[in-house]
Length: 263
Image (cartoon, rainbow, N blue to C red; front, side, top):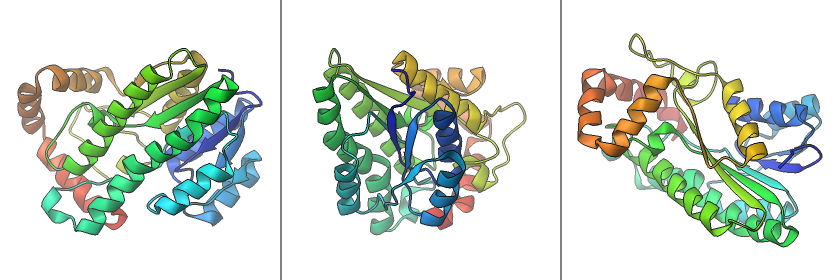
């Protein structure tokens, strides 16, 4: 699908990745509807790129349904919103667990449930889910985040199969460590030597490429991390040992400390 003159609903537009994706889509000619919790941040970005603003708290199911109803005519949905959900499960309250599940998994499913049938009726559309390499490889200290991102990958894959032949594409993006902005950058985590990163702009480019070429899955990560996620899928015990030896437990502790205020 060519995004030019298409209407895109982008969730999580207040964060660094959301900003990069919004700017990239607007530059390609899309009409962008920005959604997020902070209306002031959305307004500033909307003024910059000529977008529409649709504030919503995706931890509120009623707000998710209202967002979908108000924008039922969009051509493209980019489910980018997410909370970090870092740390061991025992460190979470029940309410914090529920919020992570609502934002990271429930909201994308509800938005798809509401918007996909309209796209099918028109015979054209695209849905993009922002997952993570954590949706391919499980690691200690991120059980809740892994659960939401694995779930998102499974949902996206099944929806792609269900919508095959309707004119509606489905794609999933799997970022690794993204520098400069986003969850990883906000946590100020220090990676071991040799562990590479990518930029928000590269995630935005991958998102546009996924839509234009109807790609099922795209990893946005250095080759070493891509190979690590592949190993995690075929030999999880071996991958877990490699992760421990390469400082994975320390990285997980840094993430938990740096993201406590985002639960």
